Image (cartoon, rainbow, N blue to C red; front, side, top):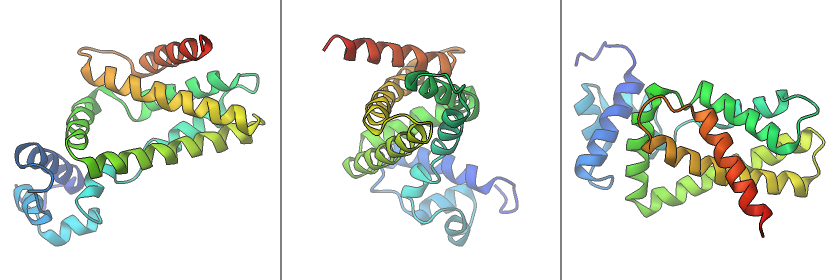
Length: 189
């Protein structure tokens, strides 16, 4: 690929995931990624701080989720506001063209304990952002915390199912289904 081709960031991500899968995360360097993408190492560093950032970069989940929770109808119960946030993720993030990336990313993270830890920290940040968004809606913090935890579990279940599913499964539908299942399971305790 020529160095001038557009979307260097996307190319770097795709190549990195390919190399991580083939060689392993630890055996892949920034130089390997840049060279395979047909770019200079300096170009890599214009887009990413290090090779972990290829997998974790900007958190694309927080903003659409929090914005949709804030925009949910004022009469919406906390779990319904959470479901509105999941609908936004289905529209904005977990689109059909993003499925392959999600599956490949998950495989790399599952194979590396340090990356699993980083993923857990991202999940905690997402949960904290949801708690704050629900609290701004007037939801008591304890209820907001429980809702955010249930939502985090439902999101995890939905992402796994969405990655395994073939066809046109709507992410919003999967998350609403998972949220209902998690809520029902919690109700039996």
